Structure formats: C-alpha cells, structure tokens
Amino acid sequence: MKVVIDAELCQGQGRCFSIAPSIFDFDDLGSGFVIGDGTLSPETMDLARLAQANCPEHAIFIEESP
Image 1 (spheres, rainbow, N blue to C red):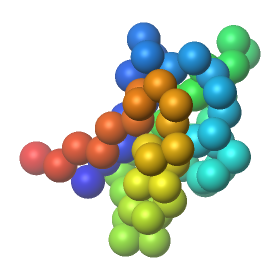
Image 2: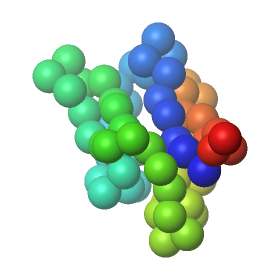
Image 3: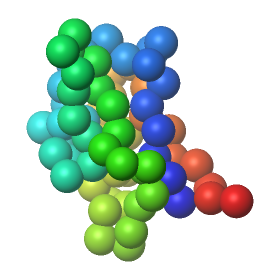
C-alpha cells in the first residue's frame, strides 16, 4: 500500500502533518507532500488512514501497490 497527496487538491491545511509527521511534511508554500516513496507499513497504515479521513480537501489517497 502507498499513500499519495494530490498536489492540485491540497490547500496546505497541515492536518496530515499534524496527525502523521513521520509520513507527511510540507513544502515552502505550505503544501503537503509524502515523505519518501509513500510505502506504508502495518505500523503507519492507521496513521495514513486517519490523515486521509481528516483532510478537508480529500487530497490524500491510499493506493494498492502493484
């Protein structure tokens, strides 16, 4: 499983970073991005889902890995 942020939808609310700073960070403009390649471990899956549920722009997506 991988997590991604749609940069066009993200408005920089920062909830993802507040919930899961080990998964998400923000750039100089305040937009969120995924740290690393977005691969989720069993330990980070719940945090990623919580961040996804709390994103007001619905910009976070959890995808099945190929």
